[in-house]
Image: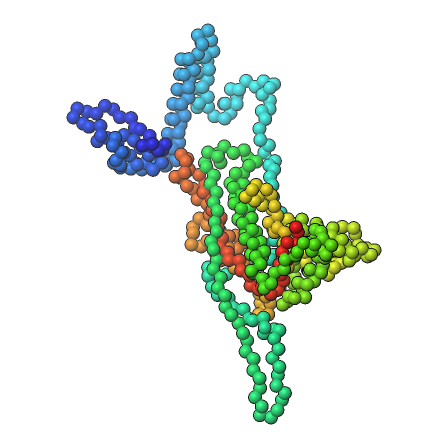
Length: 431
């Protein structure tokens, strides 16, 4: 009986010979279950949630509350101000049934009441995380099944020699066969929810748009976690054929042997395909632009600026496309740090999505289960590049006294390294 939702019921005195234990003594105001004095369930009352009944009961409750307030004012007023107190009590009763216009006319507006400070209706500020690149490194590929296999031809088919035999009458011709393997992906469902109590939604200032704010917070959380997962995938040395650790003196933010352009060229030269992009955090990008070895490559170019942009650096040094990852997150110790950390990732993006050429390979893909929400009546799928994201919203009447809007955002992804041989990972480029 300690649950705050269980309240006692009031009864008339039992008739002679009738036991009080035979009557319900408590009710759970959320579920409608009723209990006797011993705590046994003796039934369940069904809520009558019709609009007319609710309006009538709400009006009665408001009227009773107003009259109770008026009686309290009249009974407890200071004797010398009795007439004033009675006038206040009458005003409470009158205003309890008045409409908005009548309430406004009853106000005695003075100079100090011309404006009461309140929330601005069209101005709210907030923060936005910037520079997410997960979809660049591991572009989403929408798939029809939650789990499947995909085939991949062996890299040796493109690079290994198979010398044709010199032609001779009746000689056996050397033969080759395509070599391939299959790999399974299995998407993992990820979901996050939000709840907006009815009281909060009714009490909000117009500028807040609390439901939209809740959904924005949910999307931000999902996107941040995806960025962290993809960054972890790319920055795990075991996912590459041979990751490179830059030792002291070679880091891009200092050291006599530091040469970022040479490090990048080494990766390009050892790669089993063209490197199309490189991802580095903002602090590494800034260190690279300031690096003396980098600046020495274009110092004597008359058109070169003192501090180059991404496009200018790519053009001047013939580098892969630079993606500056400015996204940050709060670590467990409370400090703010870059998601892509101190490493540089060089990779290859597919030429098109979905791939139409069996000779095109990408460093990574995200297999995204293309849920459409067709099996859930309160779900809506996001179209376009966001296919596979499902949004649900329904009214949950069992949370709090008045219930509220329950929202859910879900998607199913499997981030996979589909090639460990194009590009590479430069560990500790910044130290």
